[in-house]
Image (cartoon, rainbow, N blue to C red; front, side, top):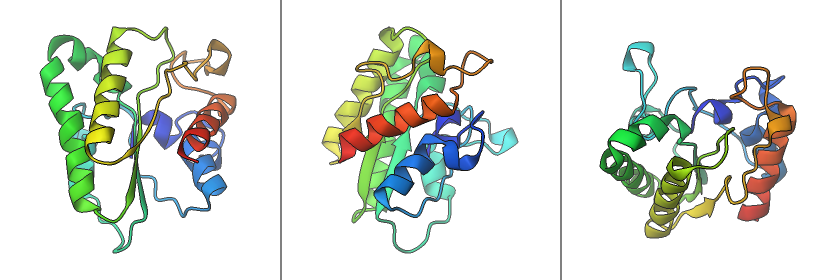
Length: 178
């Protein structure tokens, strides 16, 4: 689960999104439930877009789940500026819920990415994801240390990445989880 980067917005095909590239490399069967514009707190229930914890609670999963990937958070940067405690609690609650709901699964925590310079918001959220991953036994992956998204990876909208950007994210994730 995750945001538009995990959903593969602007990828040429769903197979070109980073999560599908990782699943293929790792020989996993992927069920991608990511929604663009969502985050640990960011949600649009009127459009059916839920926060990550709400997604964990509401999506019907098969009986056996081996791996749960929770990725993203850059949509929470605005909330982080005004209500950091709310965001930090939501990050922790999301990973606590994943650990309870999928006790036998490997949980992979992919921190936020950013198409911009890595600022305080990205670092603070990345630190919160890292801490929650450690607390709940998840494997942590940083996309900002160093920043995997380069300017030449950006699509014309200046926010989302091209297939090259998705491939770079996939390489980082595979390298850090292998």
